[in-house]
Image (cartoon, rainbow, N blue to C red):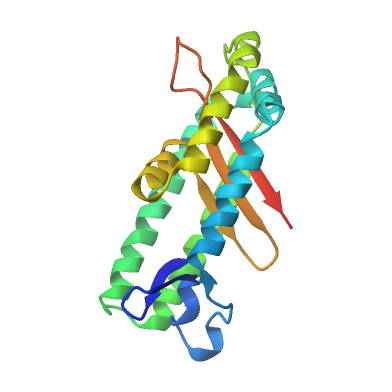
Length: 204
């Protein structure tokens, strides 16, 4: 979805990107969603996810038992990155009207299908060695960390909220059937701040 304003910014909405793109028969008929309603729902869902440290600790324990095979994962990440770059170039060609719409639509479909297959394979990679995380330290420190993030989420607004959502890598994806909201929380390991636990909340 993308942002949309009416009456010189007085009313703010989100709408599907396909509301106006493509042929009339292929356009999305989903209604506009008020900005306040959607952003409030996402904020509440994030607070709900972060209210329970057990959810994240369970994921940390699962990851401590296994991580994807590095070699194949690296190859898949590289190929997915190349597909993403091709998709970005396709968007530029579309906006510049340099190619027929039907050709762009077909190429976009092909790239999306290929990327979906690669991402599915990436998720199903065999599991190998364990990362060196101190789970006991996480268990003692994660509740206070999550409580702080929750407090920030409740109070943050405008640019502060945008910065916070970027800091925890929040992503929201929606279709007619389901909504997925995901984010990452620092593992709070003083020896390696790069390790993150990714959490997800999915509703049908």
